[in-house]
View 1 (cartoon, rainbow, N blue to C red):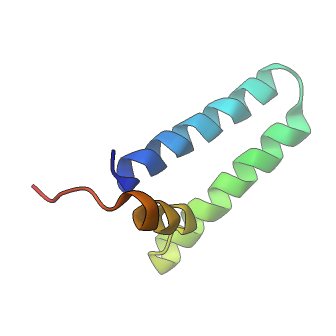
View 2 (spheres, rainbow, N blue to C red):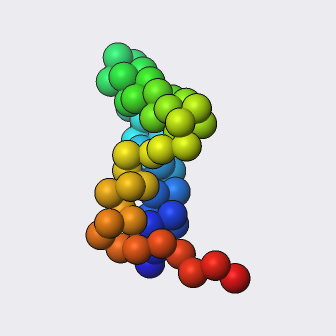
Length: 66
């Protein structure tokens, strides 16, 4: 599996955990987790640099271009 796919799966898992926290009444932790994801996505949008994608690229490599 390549870095881009792993990063997308990780983002989906983190958002799912955040949603589960909201459902279970742990609003504060859900908000903290969602805020972290929002900050990372906004940073990625403005700087074209995503820390998790950078780490995963170093470990797993990038996806092959088709």
